[in-house]
Image (cartoon, rainbow, N blue to C red; front, side):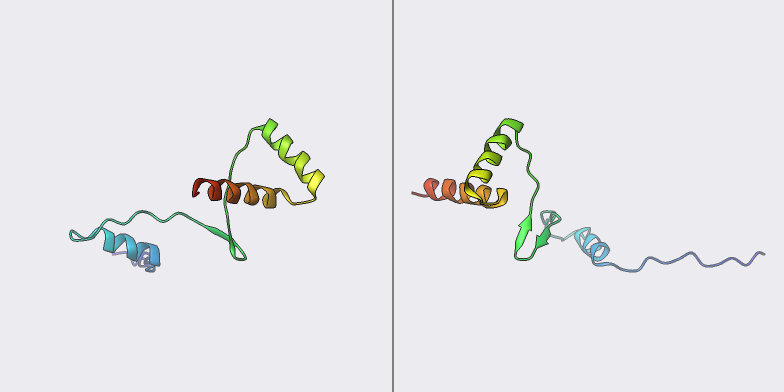
Amino acid sequence: MTVTKRPPTKKATEKSIEKFIAAAPDATPVAPSRKTLMRGKREQISHTIPPALLARLNKQVEATGVTRAGLINQAIAKYLDSENT
C-alpha cells in the first residue's frame, strides 16, 4: 500500500456557495449578475462606435474642450430627458 497525499480541498468561495444554493430544488431563479468595474462613483462600460461618428465626436471634443466621456454623458442625458417629456 502506497501512502499518498490527500488531494487539495476546494475552499468554499462566495461563488461556489451561491452555485450550491441555486442548485437546490426549491431555489428561486436569479438572473446572473454581470461583472462591473467601478471607477470612483462611476461604472465603466464598453461601447463600440462607427469611425465616422467617432471622428465627429472628436471634432466636437476639440471645439468645446469637454472630454469625450463628458460629451457622451451629456448626449445620453439630453436624449433621455427628451424621451421623458
